[in-house]
Image (cartoon, rainbow over all chains, first blue to last red; front, side, top):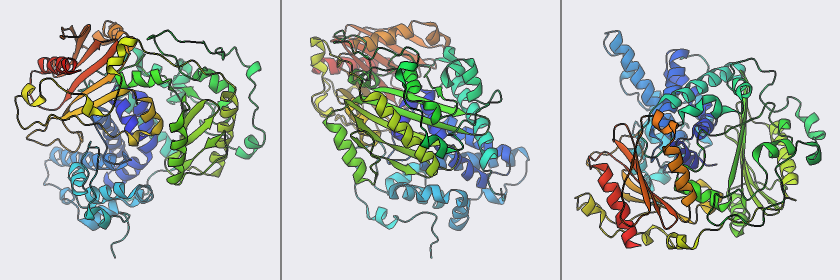
Length: 173
Length: 431
């Protein structure tokens, strides 16, 4: 069953569908969170928050591509950023350096544990990962940049897409 | 963290624990979802397995004697696959199909064998050590498009097998084999799927991380399958999967299918005749929302990514959206465009009635759902179901023996109930 179909079922209240999506992607999300979070406990919290967000937001969600993985990774990244922000505020310290949006090289390094998973995605999904996880765009902004209208029937061809048809974790040189 | 992420048993223990927490939080979370059923009364254990023992094992509550995965010595299993022994198993559901189904009644799956019996007859334990048949917390159809799948004859069987250190899952979807089944096989092969030589036609696509999926056409049946596991997916697991698919084909092939489901004559008014452009509104949405910027054309969501089997199964139903743009774009986490959504399943009176029965029950009231009968001009019956103090509502309508659902996903403060009713009345008036 496709990711899109499982999302639709989760949206109608099927925890079985949520379970299937967890089975499909939790390993990869955990590996990504491992590079983002300071402790194992934080990783667990981020991963759980990511899938609970999926559960809450599955209503009406329509993927512009085949795979849910890019969306999950973006949500995972956001939860990790939120967590760092909370920790910093709780400590009443100055914002740590790593709250500044990482540059491309740092962001690429954060993907070191999920390179194979991302390389296995379709070119469009890899491009979304590139734009969101390395260039810092939101999921919707990335879809728009790539000429995909989230939820629309058709996608228009964009020259940007062909430019981005490389694995996001490849070195730039 | 600068350390390497966990692997093997350590990773799996972590995943099992997180999965348990996620499912529990999903149970507890009241979500802004029109029309979904919050079946808390069915509980987590009902979700994850059949019976408390199975559920406990599945979630790692008790030590499991099983690995929860394929046999550790796959070659032995593959070389001596347990032969399907239908006569030695507990009495299966009768394979002799009824000659007809009651017109307009609750449909039965085309494949005349239930999931538990299929597991037994195909020796599922050769693929999954401790299979738990997953049953949803939802009984009956919970949306018109799902009712349409049932009317097509589709059936889903999902199992997982989980211990404290590993898990795996296997799913199979069955449906009538028609011309579109062979097209699905051809499409899969064009995408690089391999022929695994099972049944009359078959395909398989495997990825290291995501497991294997594919199609088997055998006898009267169209089967889609998926297998995944929490550890690396290698040749041994692939061989076990192939052996299991062969056994399933052997079990299924001789079965006489159930007769197709038939709708009442009245439902013909809602039988799908084209795309969403054939569903029109007597009163434009721009008028109903008092916003001239709203376009009136409905669009059909792209079902291609749902897979060809589900696309075929929903072919008789409508799932249409009218975009309702907002000044502030949704956040990336919402990802969904604001829209009015309409689902229509021709002939699914049985589904509407099942829904009404649920709404009248304790499970719905336990969630604090506001269930209100309403009048929709032109309809026989209608109910609005709201969660979160009316913030999120959906309208279920019975008209011409058919089930329509109207819902709205967005941030506009529109007085949701009147607009939903107006949309339904407008569609009925224009039919």
